[in-house]
Length: 441
Image (cartoon, rainbow, N blue to C red; front, side, top):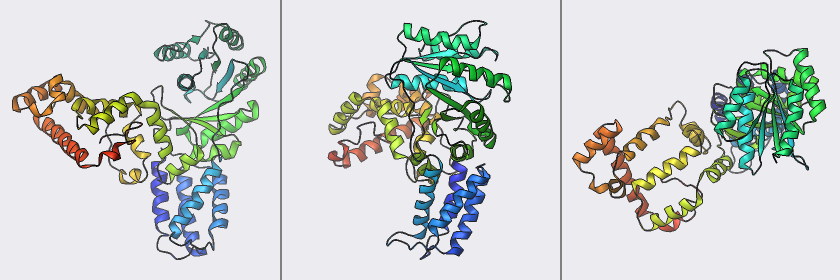
């Protein structure tokens, strides 16, 4: 997400380093580059124009604060304006005082509404809610069965009726939710390949009858300005409350995320960043701005760790580290904790400075699979006491895991080096480092 835009802005801002003052000349040259980068990222041209005017007004003639370079100062100005551009603050889902809360999803066909509906349900359940999904798209082939499968996979009920009226389905689902103590109802409404009067009239009737507490427009982040244009048309006809950007883990250039809020006046509430049920993030403008400028996102990283890490296991691991009893079994357990946090490239990208270093360097999650296979091919005794793994045992483990003896040697050598490093470190440094989920590699 935003990799291309990040690299272009980074190159532009580096040119200001070494200057003693932000002048008309160096600011003008940098703004031209920033303008080009934003337009190539498919940011709306009017948004780019206003954005650059605000930066120029703030930057020209600014004296550089002592120990702060012009490059650092312009980064701060660009950061502040990006945050303002994307909405200034995080916007939560509005929950009803008297349940159930009704959340209506709308958007064009193919934008990812159905998949997002299941992700939102999964997200809300982790927050202590009891959601129910509603299959209100009776037009798209297999739309109902798709939602039922997604609901079954995450153990969340789906309300559906065969060949019925979508307005009646939505209305009946709210009554059903009350009867079954479901405090959130998520309506997966029908989309079309393009906006038409029939679709908008149906959505307007659902809104009138059900009176949803929150209407979310689902936009495909990969369609760029097409998503912004569709959002404008939906806003005129339906007046939604917030925006969700899907498919932001693919080839999305980021233009929709930067300009859709400014154009519609509505805040982005979520971004969808993968296919798994938990591949959803609350949208925080300050954190996204930080990622765009290659400054990482430590807060989101910590939140992911807190959600994924078993604190009881972390306590046990800390005790083992203090006693120098860290084994391959513990190493394997830490890999499982990391995998719960999401794709490795995404996690590393949240660490300040890492995203720049990883540019054009492939980060392969399949490396985990290889290590897991090698450890799973060991006996319990070998995992607890890796020093007993001799030549014949290494050949057996390699054969059992589909790897080479050299791979086994590399794993064991790296593990021994890691144990030596831990032994040299003062044990006081471990207190809190593994709480929650610090990683031993």
